[in-house]
Length: 553
Image (tube, rainbow, N blue to C red; front, top):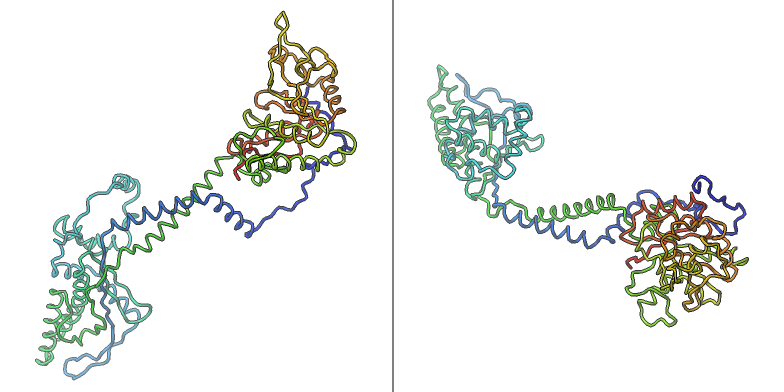
């Protein structure tokens, strides 16, 4: 019945309801997102720094574990020339276009040429081209290969090299040839007639031998074909044959030695414009690039972990986040000051000064929200939280003490009983010592027994008698009469019990002029605050804002 018939809100209320006025425009757009990311990075600067250092460390260890790699590159230029024909001194000039250059590029990548160079340089016994031992991810990769079709796994050079190595004698030589092809890089420079032939290896002397050997092998194939054509002619000149034979022998010797031909090869329709030289320093691994990449991965990994943590961890962190996520104004933040549980008459330490200043700001915010009410009569302020051990009693006591310093009377209805009450001869607890007992026994306000802590009159809400707490009805009109009578003497502060253990807080909150929801930083979740506000408003309470307790400065 309490939820189905909440107390109607007074349309002519004398309290400025902050929760009903939300006219502030929300900041949005890329600039707001950038500011948010910067603020987030500054707030989590230590975890991000740790992630970046971890990324640098892992990248450095990885770069250190990689063997050095050396590269060498030879450059070949295709150019047309006039060839000798039968019965003529010179034939027509050959044409050279982009399609023919692409054809010659495929000729260099062909199995015939690469396998000839591989055999002539005797690379099958090179240690770095041998089969590698299976790594830790080999079982997973093998399982993936079983699930996927074989045609989808072999692409590019690997697929081409697999077809080329099909006729090699054994698996060891096939694996060496496949590794040889993977380390080879043959490409055309733009749309020019220049072909670059590069090779990388851990042996600093091997890349230049392989690159020059491939160039010589290509020249050998081109010249030997012309020699065979010239010998097939019926009236070939002996001098022409001798010149071609010399070029063929020079190209063959260069291919077997891993060097360029000793003499020019003009009949190959290609000219060597850059020989592959032994590298003086390793080209890989690029440790600086790996370190930079490791740092970026660590940074993005840290941001990802923070994003996942923020998505899963809905705990209250600061006032700004609480105000944005809960959709209600946050009136202030009380710093985490160990040992601060009251407002002393004399503030001696900086910690006490921070605590008292936060309570002072909270009192000011409450008075601003209740400006019109302050002129008529005293106000009743209730402080409540979702769970226990959030500091509601401490904050309520400090707030009541600070209000009393302004010369007005303050009555504090405290959730936890702080005094020992002498029992009667029959073991019963006097009903005048608690609000629950007064409501159960129909005791008048003038008959209540208050404690006096400084200038604050304190009365426990619950009785030490469990049966009295069970049978007391805090929605009764007698409870409202007691609170109204206390307001006639001054301000009233209600230290309400947590909502997760009792609904008494909802009944008492409806009698307060202003209700504040307290959230413990790092413990209370946004969902608990939202549920608390929803239940209080459904019960007819006027929730004016939230407060973050034990916030980190």
